[in-house]
Length: 579
Image 1: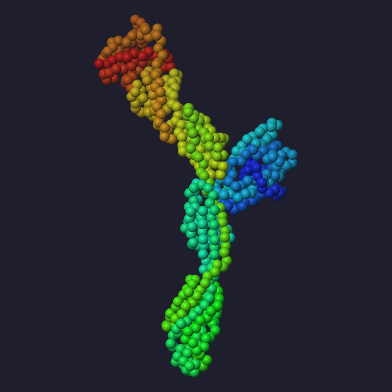
Image 2: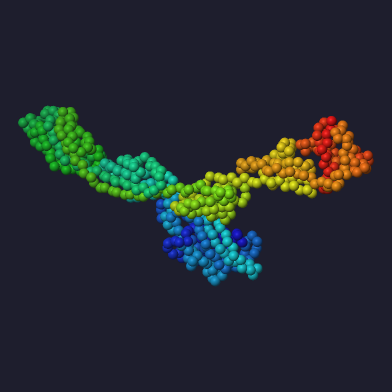
């Protein structure tokens, strides 16, 4: 049943139950060869942070279907989408069904949904969808509640305005953005005036990477100005003397006839001044030529009608407003350039740093409940030993099993974080099984260290040990998740039949190791016995012979417990000394 419900969930897996997206129209060609819930298309396009996103999906819901895993034929009566968690901040969806209900049994076999909005945070999201499905199988109506996670990728929010680009528009906790101005009026001089909203400014086309370390909104603005330069006037006060060696200047009463030409960055002559006759100094006013294709050069000449013009020097123009003096090969003078702002462009964009959620949970006084009381938190996914705990999605969790607990929380802005861990160590209780004469605790721990009367028992590293010897037992365990727990002491008292014990005697005590057992006035024949040292190790065992004797001479001198009786029956224990 879960298999086909998981496909149904895909039909509704992206969005909010309170959406304002455009209406959708189902694609009724979305029908598989075998009647089974189907989603078209199978893969949704990725979203991009900061960019508007809109797409539609169509789903097919047959009234009757066969579960491919079990072969069970069921009727699909009603589907209700009850909740959606984990949706990227800024996205929502609109279902075509009324109040999120769909009725395949009544012929409503096609539906659709529109997903829309502007996601702001990049990342891979697990959108968790909750549905109730009413099905009929074997004539019985069943209501099934399921939750499923569907991934959705939001790509980094690269984008731009008309005059600058950026590589990210929002983030949680902090934001790093790379900017670049798009408009460059070259060869006309271009200036950029950045204000990044974080206290930093820049006049570079590609400014330094900007950091935003506090939550809030930051308005970034850029004013781009293309500056126009105007050659206003040129004056010469002296000229290079190589103009005076030709016939034109001789007939001109010994004075030159200066003029100049202006060449642009393509070495084209773009302006030629008027010639001023028979002067060694001259001024050209109100030239008013816009310098839009630098670099520019002024070339001065002496105009000759008979011979070639005499070259008097060339001056590169410096794009700096104001009067500029020059002197090249003796040609001296002043030129004046003025600047005027040309085209100006202005754009701004808001960048957002969302606060990270409060991840640390609180622990109840009795230590049994982990919980949050932050109203800004909206989603909770509890983990045990790194795995999600099914249906543990509330702000509080009652711990049941030992292990390491943590929680993935998401706040109202869609920012997620993982809490620190809380380790719940297991309780260790020793249980005695009188039928097997064993002491045991739960299995699955990393190591076990058993003790008897305060001393370690060598070789016992499992979850159970032999409990045939009365005394005080304890065990210390370690777990794979860092716990070391010591059990309480378990005192094992082997049951004794007091009237029976009163009729059994052991002598001599102390002895050399050969002892006699007597019941009343008669030898205790063919009776099992064990001699155990105070660490629980058996040093000798056997059955009494026909005379009621037991041979303990294989044991070294010391104190021993003598266990007398049949297996699984009440036994008698005596403390004896061997000299």
